[in-house]
Each structure stands twice: as C-alpha cells, then as structure tokens.
Image (cartoon, rainbow, N blue to C red; front, side, top):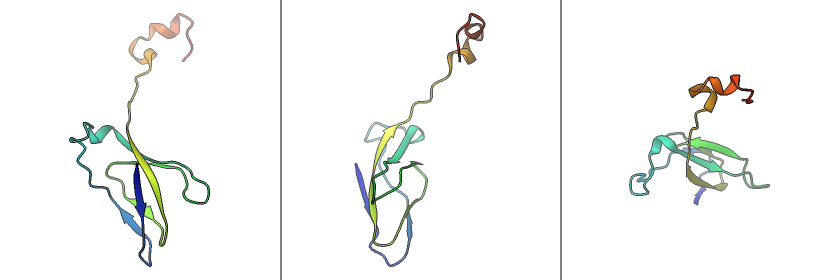
Amino acid sequence: MIALANWAKGAADVTLTIDWKALGLDPANVRITAPEIAGLQEGRTFRVADRIPLEPGKGGCSSCSRHVTRTPVWSVYPEWESHGHDK
C-alpha cells in the first residue's frame, strides 16, 4: 500500500522511486493501481514511469502488483478455434 498526499497550494505530478529489484519485481511488469474510493479518489491504473497527478490538499492510496500478460491459446494454436472452441 502506498499513501500519497499533496499539501501544496497547486496541483502536483509525482513519479515513484522504488527499488523494484529489492521487491523481486520487474518494473516492466508492474502496475500501480489506485482503487476507486468514494469521496477520496477515482479508480486509475498507472505504469511505473507514469506521473501520478495529485490535487492540492488531497491525497489517495495505491498498490503495486505484477501485471501478467497472457497470450490467447488460439494465437499460438490456430487449430483450437477450428475445433469449435470459442475465443
């Protein structure tokens, strides 16, 4: 869990500096997720290098997770679809 806040008078964009290797994560596969919390923040997802906008006098919370990209079986085995399996 990551808590972020902005006490400045104006809006701010931040980037996180995290030792991903120490966490055992490849930054290319990490997503930062800010869940929707009514009255606090909209739900959004960021990549490691993205700038995270913070409104003045506000904050929010986020979490980091490993993002896994899956290859659809029919793109590797085209015959899968020809045997009546749906995409």
